[in-house]
Amino acid sequence: MISNSTTSPAVAWRQVRKSYPDGPEALRGVDLTVAPDECLAILGTSGSGKTTLLKMVNRLLDPTAGDVLVRGIPTRDWDPIALRRSLGYVIQEVGLMPHMNILKNVGLPLRLQGRPRQDRDREARERLELVGLEPDRFATLMPHQLSGGQRQRVGVARALMGDPDLILMDEPFGALDPITRRELQDEFRRLRLRLRKAVVFVTHDIREACRVADRLAIIDHGTLIQSGTPLDLIRRPANEFVRNFFSDAESVIEVASGEST
Image (cartoon, rainbow, N blue to C red; front, side, top):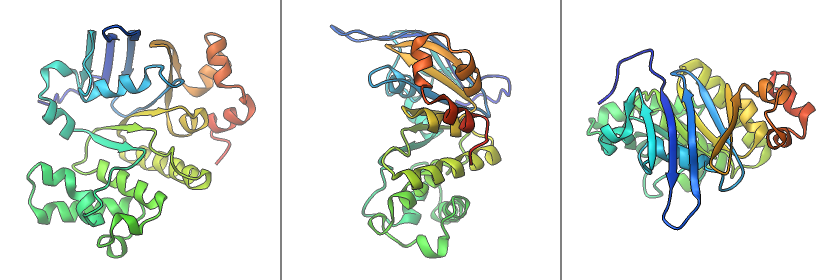
């Protein structure tokens, strides 16, 4: 069940609350949207609720109150399997199947959809090329034969299979060394601007968020503190908590304004 509306946000959280028995309220009335061609980075300290927001998009979690809408449709009205198969995913540990070569790993989403092998192999080769991995060189390799950065590129290629309009990314570059991480951040931004995908990007790294995202959402103890462009939040922080996120203001402003490449 997919809406064809071009006016609906790709994702919307409407007064979303999440509580657990005998535990604190994980989310407290969050209102937030992601436009169809926007990358939203959700930032917060550990336990702030940012991953909870992400997991509600694909119904790994349901809200206690309020609604989460994907393509204008409440997630409770989606078939969970159909919803998850309509999304792209990039996670920190990549999640490649160690017994499958790279071509089969990339083609796995289309295999789960029952697409013919010829179709999924053709598209997998196209996606590998798109992320800078030469298919003739990498297609037959196994995951253990790749570097961490190469495996993460494979993860991005797999997330693009089937041309999803919405991609979820949970600390996708967090396990990489700083140089490789920076390269992939910049390459992902170029790729996203070219393909015009909606992206929900969870990270704790403010510089990474400013580099890859159009807009930031700062979460603290389940409450949305402030959202806006990186420069908006740097120049007009809502409170001391947001101000502290940008303690290295000068270098972050360079990233947010595109002056640092």
